[in-house]
Length: 217
Image (cartoon, rainbow, N blue to C red; front, side):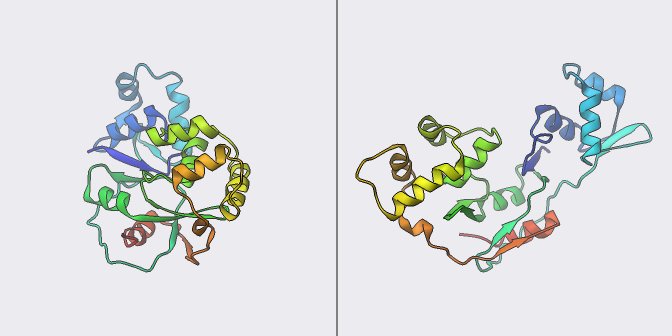
């Protein structure tokens, strides 16, 4: 079964990393077997060393195996009061599992400067927070987000938010690109109202997931 990587970073975003962890999910491989499986990968030893240093891959007895748990458990979706759950490190879930589907559909309360937005956890909801998150990490954009990119590109979020927040408070007489962004995202001054949702940070992926699953529509 494939592995879904959440909170991707530079190492975990690479195609080689994703192919490698899927190869190692159900078996251990020697270095020779890894080279044979991935003959097209340049600087393979160096990249493998980086995965080991980060703790994603473990080398023991001349064989390589995963250094993390692939999470897959039956989701419990008892509703909790709204809260902003935070876990920033990469974690790994079985793709196409009921856990993945429930986690993707859970609600994420986002805060970008003074702007408050609500999104699905998988970031498929069109929000400015999701747009800037994807642009900063060079992640694929939706068709809608590409239309936003054509307007504002990789502008600094703080710069954009200064104009957007000001226009939400006092709509300008002359329209500009930020006026169009506000229109496309259907933002109103309500987005500047702090909903007073508590933020809870987690050190453990399982704890984070257990509580995030309870943020349901």
